[in-house]
Length: 123
Length: 107
Image (cartoon, rainbow over all chains, first blue to last red; front, side, top):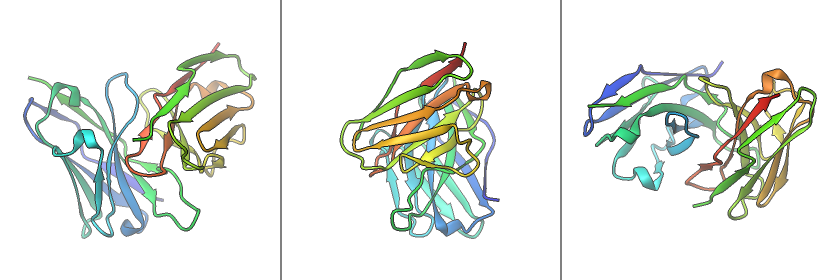
């Protein structure tokens, strides 16, 4: 079955960079976009952006523009999310999630999620 | 950006009650809406896509309706396992956005 496995928890200092990996398995890597969603402590879900592993096209939420980069390695079926210039408010659980490519009107939500990566930004 | 607003923020209901959560979009999103359930410390789970299409394996007591700017998630008979926070999310165009969440508590 389709699965996304993320890298482990991280503790970073303000100003540092973060790179989280998300390894896909159980489905054709190119058949689904990967999205990144984060959740601060006690907060709701926040969509960060997406990458299409087939075209490498990306779209980032405006509030992360200039600080986030999403890339993929097709040879390993892994997507990466890099966030630079970390701030205290970037402390959150970061999730990757799959959204299969749409087929006509068959266009669904994010159906498979990684287990989450806890990131703490602390001095 | 399209804003998603959910109501109520919290609701408390008894086992067996019918529960309704509302989600409003700041502009028309047709039926490009998903609902997720998240239990404390757990990963979000997709319940419904296309406003009303139940994901495989989701109990039939969950239902979604609406189109355009107003949507509802209904739990026809609330069960103890339904205690969770529910989020709506549009996927009409980028950037995607989530509602702020509705926490459902069991009395």
